[in-house]
Length: 264
Image: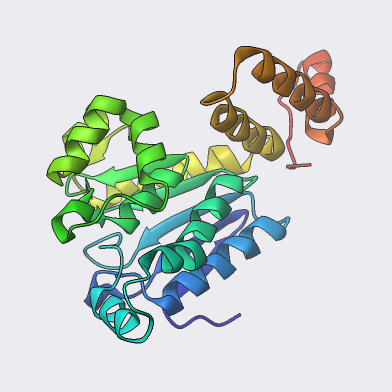
């Protein structure tokens, strides 16, 4: 499958989606959003893919909505920005959060606005010392969208999230570590690549269906009462107990060997 504004690479069980508009700092166009959604659906349905990496080419992860294209959209549609968000942004975040495989964002520069939302929607963020998350919506007279309010408040706490979004204040690499959004801020590309390689290898060899279930449980646990969460956990455990990976883990434990998971 060919793409115009992103690139796709699969190395073993790891699929890498690269936003590929480096001259525009990977600003999100209609084409790029459509291709991203297609690529995420491809990852979801391709059983050979067990880990998904999302990154940006060049100096930035993504500066969010392409403002030139947004002005053109306003000329033809009026300021119906909610419809644009509904049609082209919400499906991407839903696809990331519903992904039954671990997702990783690689941040070597800025992730702004909608780009920040995409980074927050992944399970892991591997970052360089130049990385920053920028809730820049307020700087153009807008409020957060694409799941930013939900994901940021849950990640760093309500008070911090609100104050940063009101001020449009960047979360720099050191703060990302402090807030628990990433493990380490790497000074060199080689160190960043090494962490990415180690993490993807570990996740690709793990029980893929359990990973997906863990994320979905925590997403629901954030807003459901305890009684409902207890029932969800019960149902998830029952489903996972029937997977080949769980049976393999039990057999491996009894045989005193390391389990070989196949994501099944």
